Length: 76
Image (cartoon, rainbow, N blue to C red):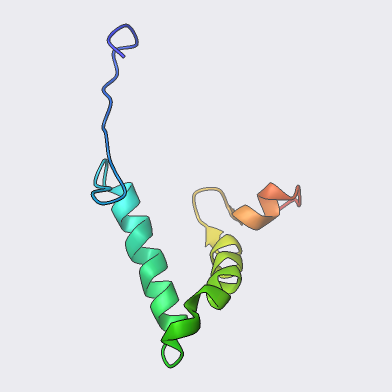
């Protein structure tokens, strides 16, 4: 890391605060999951594929497309 002039920002599952981006994604997915699971809190893992699909089809303004389209080679 010294030769590349970079710093290593260690994090763990208990304390993932390394650069702020991780916290933002955790909060985003937590809010999305909370919206899906309002009544049936014991079966939240059933909603994870829907949550993943909903996130992957969200359009990003920076790239002009969604990650689903880019991942599978569709043109925006």
